[in-house]
Amino acid sequence: MNAITLPDVAAQESGQTLPLAWVGMQGIAVPLLIDGQRVDALADAGVSLDDGAARGIHMSRLYLELEALENSPLSIRLLRQILQQFLSTHHGISRAASLDLHTHLLVKRPALVSPLSGWKRYPVSVKARLANDVFHVELKIEIPYSSTCPCSAALARQLIQQQFVDDFANKTLEHAEVLAWLGSSEGIIATPHSQRSTAVLNLRLNADADELPWETLINEAEAALGTAVQTAVKRADEQAFALANGQNLMFCEDAARRLSTALRRSSHVSAFDVWVVHAESLHAHDAVAQSRWNWERP
Image 1 (spheres, one colour):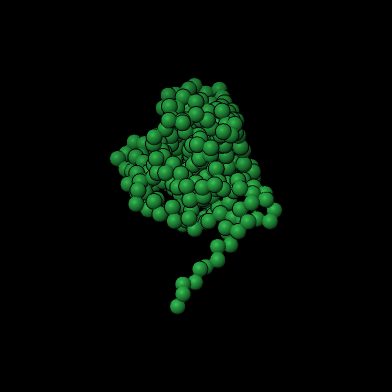
Image 2 (cartoon, rainbow, N blue to C red):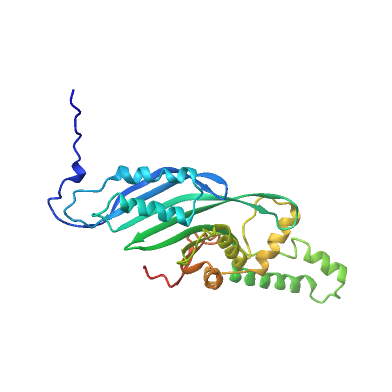
């Protein structure tokens, strides 16, 4: 029996002769190796369709190239190799290729004071682009932290001052009595509101970058904010966390500026677009701020 040649409809000519900016697939399940951990991820892979006469691309060729992610640690070199293969398999019809990977990092974090530690999950993405021989990589990192409202803190202090006046008016102050008052709920009658907040960092790496500095960038951002959320804690850690919040009162504007300053100093970053979201405990809406630097698209 003669072998049957299967039709290749994608290789047929398009009847409209119109180029397309991007054609590909989204949400492909892939495993990744990051810092020795195997994690599950979703990939978006595609190329431009610059030959408007071509009916379509060969998506299966892109899919097969993603097998390289299974056995090699994720790196900038690997990302570039995959994109070069995307274009090689679409020679003559595509000049640009992209690969986005969406996953999470598990990073073990120590407690603030005690010897405890625990795992923290950071949603992350890496976006790689190769167009006209120009290659660049962007990272997206979501970082949770705590934010305590400066306005609420000031109002709480005012109420505590007033309560002090009411409780000690026309009385001789005794050190032990004042100390006991400061440690009581009758004295500290108000506390500021705070909330879990999120910083979303979109970062373009330097053109000469040869690594994906996930943990370094997370450390720089958390140090700038000063109130990273914790994992396992004892009471001493909780007290240290309360102190950190009291020493780092911040509106969303303050958080965005702190991150902007830290990232401008980073040796890994050439541009960024930062969003901070404070999920207000006072309001039924969020407070949001954005900071950008050199973020014009290449």
